[in-house]
Length: 270
Image (cartoon, rainbow, N blue to C red; front, side, top):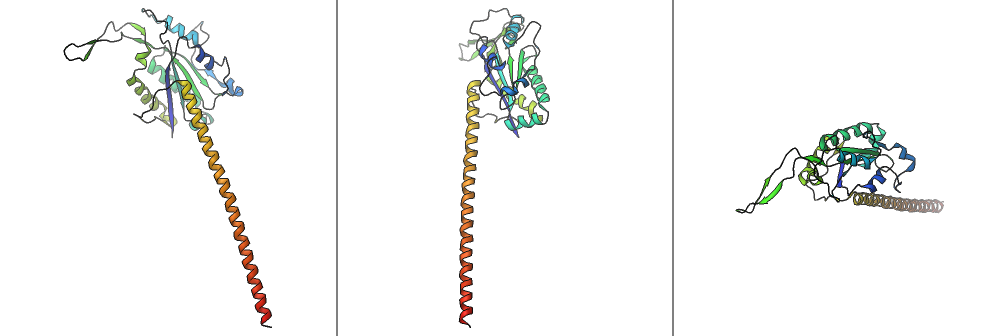
């Protein structure tokens, strides 16, 4: 049973570099050009919106946000969804990939809100089929303001208008919510034979680029180990063949000695 893979990362600014990767404006070295035509956008853009960057801007502009958005404020969250390589390739071979995509979209919409899911692109031209989804972190309710309790030093909280619409990646990426995402995503992917990673492990959140790098390094290490094992097996086969040859030679020598002895005994008896 393989693992469900869910990775979230805050994007900076308009996130143009990731849009270039997702939309294949520039073709990455690790992608197979002969399969790029199999990539597809799974979310229909609003009228007049042509790409991911415009979709992010459109969602923010039409959300009804009253507060000013800061220059460096996170406008989108990147979400990578996939599974173990062997399971994803088998899913593709069995014709179950469309169902997997539909269930991923359903989970994304239920978890982050239908309007906040502005893009989801299936990539088929890399080693493992995966989805790059884009979430605009628009939430309802004012962020809680903390004030110090003078008596016991503990924090108390107050809330403003709960109907306020705001852009806040920190709310969406809160630690307890990240755990909840992993739990519910694994539940949604269970029907495809994909399970959750170790709950409560010491795994740390890392950028997507580093995630890809470490994944490739693990795959290369695994391939190297396989090649080493094959080399050891080949060497063992050679040694076994040599030993068998030596045994056969010894048997032939023994048979020759026995035959010579028999002949000598026969001659002496005449």
